[in-house]
Every structure is written in structure tokens, then in C-alpha cells.
Image (cartoon, rainbow, N blue to C red):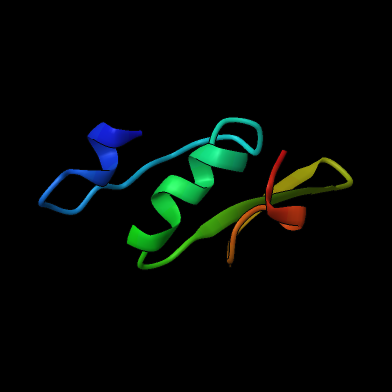
Length: 61
């Protein structure tokens, strides 16, 4: 996580709700400009994903 928090440039990080949680999330949180999560739902035979502002529900993990 130090590698990401010490970068002088923009970093886009993709993770699951179990990867960047607890202490790891605390380390990067001061440097976050925005967080988003992807919600996926299936209606009948059609799947749909949408980008939602905020971290994972319950803050992950």
C-alpha cells in the first residue's frame, strides 16, 4: 500500500470488497479523491451493471 500512497501521480485502483479493507483502507483513505462500486443485477435473462458513488456497502470486508 505504501507504493500506492507514495505515488506523485494519479492512481486508479480496482479491488474487490475483501482486498482493500481495514488497515489497508485506512492507509489509502486520506489520498482518495473519489470511490465507486459496481452493482450488478439480473432481471430475467438480462444483466445490468451500474456505477454507484461510494465504497462497498458496509465499507467492504
